[in-house]
Image 1 (cartoon, rainbow, N blue to C red):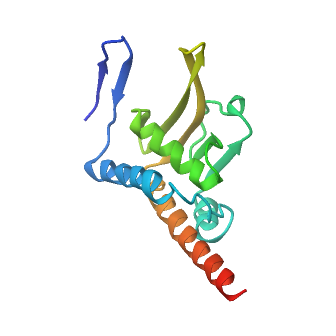
Image 2: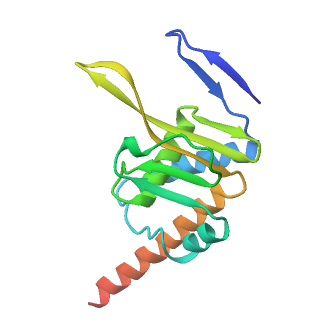
Length: 168
């Protein structure tokens, strides 16, 4: 489905043009962000294992930038720029996907998800604007396998770390 709605405060929200399976997958991302990563955000190694292979095979750029001035809207496909808002790069990436979906800031552009995440800017307790903290276009057939690989690699990394700590 595809539609826009204007809220009572005048803000316009767009609803997503997603398949039922994609909606379920985004809800899985919310679960990962809210449950699996709540207490331990470590274990991600974004440049290793299956994640490294997926990035190379798909010419995928996942780039953590120092601050929001480095997050710019761009036309590149399979590119995602984001600020670090959690304890690790992997947890930050997943949190930005979760936030974008939860705030209706994901849309479909052909075969790609257009993903945007914003942080509210306040002065003296009043919202005065928004700051773009993540932006990217990721192929619809790539996003969820990427997140699955990230979580599988993370589970293996945490197991290896726990095994090492027990034996040393």
